[in-house]
Image (cartoon, rainbow, N blue to C red; front, side):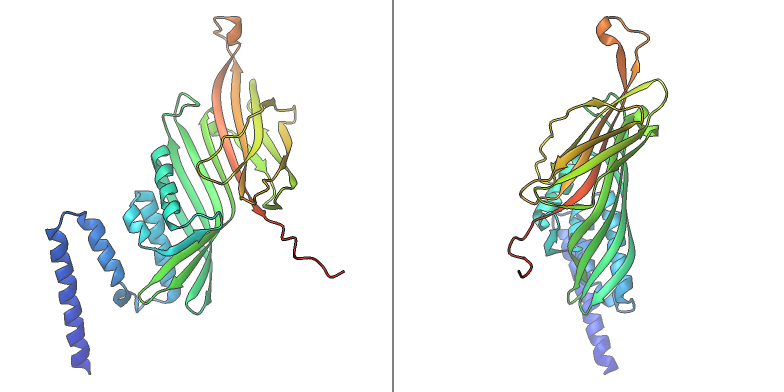
Length: 305
């Protein structure tokens, strides 16, 4: 029996060698091609690892390939049935990723698994996610900026014949901040409910710790999480002496998840004004987005009367 096992192992090694030879003979990116083949036979390497360890490896690889923008490698960890709680399927999700990478030249991703639950060949993983990066060549401010995002998510995976694949992701909560100029060193707090019903009112509020001698104007709005994004109508207001701003918002009727959005401008009195029109100068800009998950009301679910 041992000889038979060794025989199949030798055949497997020979076939792997042949795969590498063929890859070198065709005009493709060798690294991506070989990575794909190695992933498909990784079952033999993972037999000594527990399911939990394999899932942690998958999420670590996802973080690594997101940061390095290796789209082809990244796709290998996702099942074709993949769907997000925003309704983005496998193909659309990766198209959105490519658009994000065009606008933000440097992003570092980190996914930290907190708890893994199993149901036979299925798993769900509660995770903390952090994204940090730099922003340059902005049309809204003359200077570089930073982007910071934190989220709590649930990843869904299923075990295929050879490894674990991601079938979905549910974003529980998320906040993203983009800052330029003097706003980089300022603290902002945008408050909004984690979930609401569709077509219902809710309140969002903004707290700002502004520096002395600065004028802060801000607008509060909401945007459904759809692509392409629609820009909200900004109504800027000067923050109060308490450095707060509140607004009542009505969630969308269609049940799209949405972001509560704060757009903030930092100004100072212009000591070198040339004309009366230039009394103040812009010294910083910030954008804050906080996720609000929206649920449709099922009118058929009623209490017995």
